[in-house]
Amino acid sequence: MIHQDTIVALATPPGAGAIAVIRLSGPKAIEIAAEVFSSVHAKDLKKQKSHTLHLGHIVDQNKTLDQVLASIFKGPHSYTGQDSVEISCHGSTYIQQQIIQLLLRKGARMAEAGEFTLRAFLNGKLDLSQAEAVADLIASDNEAAHQIAMQQMRGGFSNEIAQLRTELLNFASLIELELDFAEEDVEFADRTAFTELIERIDNVLKRLIDSFAVGNVIKNGIPVAIVGEPNVGKSTLLNALLNEERAIVSDIAGTTRDSIEDQLVIEGIAFRFIDTAGIRDTEDIVESIGIKKTFEKIEQAQVVLYLSPQLTQVDELKNTLIELEKIKNQYPQKLLLPIFNKRDLMSPEVIQAIKHQIENALIISAKSGQGIEEVNQQLLSLVNTGALRNNQTIVTNARHYDALIKALEEIQKVKHGLQTQLSSDLMAIDIREALYHFGLITGQVSNDELLGNIFANFCIGK
Image 1 (cartoon, one colour):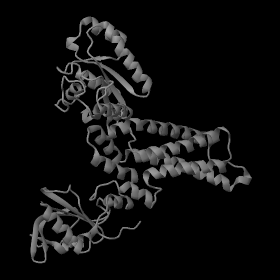
Image 2: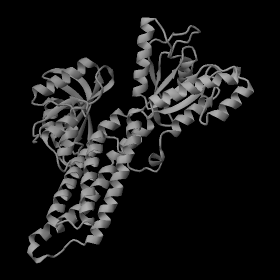
Image 3: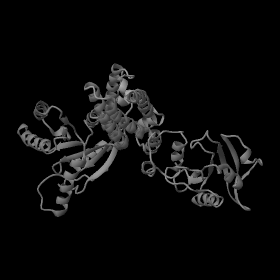
Image 4: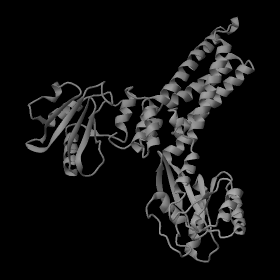
């Protein structure tokens, strides 16, 4: 893929604001900008040093469009690796459009989604996993997602993969060399050292693959369904967790007829709470649809908060135990947290019975907020944040996850080949496949379709 033309795009969000930034990149970026820029100090942009800032006006023939600041970045020392200019203008949408249209008339073309970052990749400024981390960084909406994206953009993940690939490539070269001397029956690759390397790669790949469970949760948030019978306080619990009046609260059973969703960030981890319609037998058609949606939301959730009806006597606990068992049997893969609301109305005997019979039960008062922090901490304990705290590499990208799975399959074939003393020519095939999947992650192996799919998800101007 050759990108030798000059592209332009708005780098800031569309709409009116205090300022807007218009970005140019390509071999004629400085030349095109110089044609329309009139410096207040009569400077020629084409003669200015890289990484300098200049005050002036954008002029279309004799018409002044705006007073701007022009930033000059000369390749290869720029984001894209090409000559680049960033024009900071006032944030009027009219001014933005007029300047971009002027630059288009002077020879630039509109950039496609992610094309600036694509050029950075093609010019060796970023590898592919770092480029994808740029999109994750832009999309990060909590501390944990931001931390992972920053770590990957700095090359933490790609460096780990690149090192493994280099070591495997060195041994692959020796294995391939043995094929040239097959008749002499010599071994250039030390099988003991090679076995140790394969074992280490196997362990690293398994760790990275396992980290995807945490990474996916951090990136997309943990869906949590709040379920239970009508009028047990599900909407009150949602409001208490969010600390705002998000859901309508009423003494009338069946008030919530559709699911209500909102997000809460607890210590940097996003949780997506879903308040569902109460589960009961009903002839109300609208409520029945809401109950059907409740079961759909349980299917989508990773965590189910089951809110028990108010208990006034110890004997009533049996019904709750039956309902909990039903949910466990119907959704065995879901994490289930039993919550007993209206603690302030419970007798000490009932509270003691709950604690004795249900190990992980949480007893709260959603109305007063008592026990809500305990719910937060229990939810947080479901996420293994140890790797995040220790700044370990965490995989968040499904494409990377798929490549790692396939690389592990090939590495395990090599491992089996070493154990069974498989011939070098057959082992070389599996090693090449593993190297191929490593290369897909960092972009050492790529094609137009792959790059098109990745960068199509970027915003225009990045």
